[in-house]
Length: 133
Picture 1 (cartoon, one colour):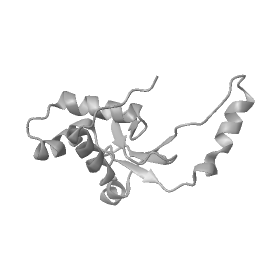
Picture 2 (cartoon, one colour):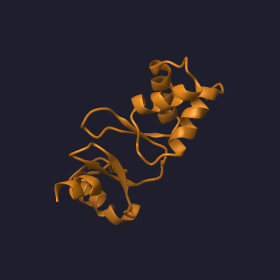
Picture 3 (spheres, helix red, strand yellow):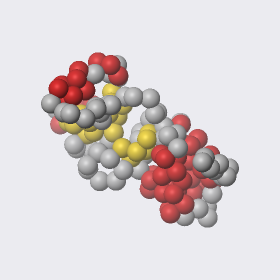
Picture 4 (tube, one colour):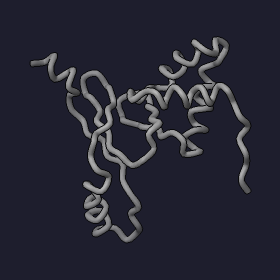
C-alpha cells in the first residue's frame, strides 16, 4: 500500500533551498534559511520534512561522524570529502564505477550480497590547506 504525502509549501521550500546549494547543509542551516520565508516554522518541522525527503529518496542524509548530519539534494551515486579542519563536506568528481572494485573485494569474503557502498574521504579542504601553507 502506497501513501500519498500531502503537499507542503515548507517542504517545497526546503527542497528548493537544497537544490540551489552544494554545501551539504545541516538541519540547523536549512532551518535558518527557511525561516526567512516562513518565520513561524519550527526546527522540528524542518527535521521532520528533511527525514521525509530522505525516506522518499529525494534527498540523501550524510552522517560523516564529525557532528551533525548533512543533507544533499544530489541523489545520484557520488563520493564526498570531509574536511578535518572546518568540517565542510564537498562532492568529489569520481566516476561512480571507478571504485566498483571495492564491492568486488568486499564480496569475495562475504556470503551475503554486496549492493553498494558509501565512502567518505577525509583531509584538508582547499581553503584550509591554503591557510596552513
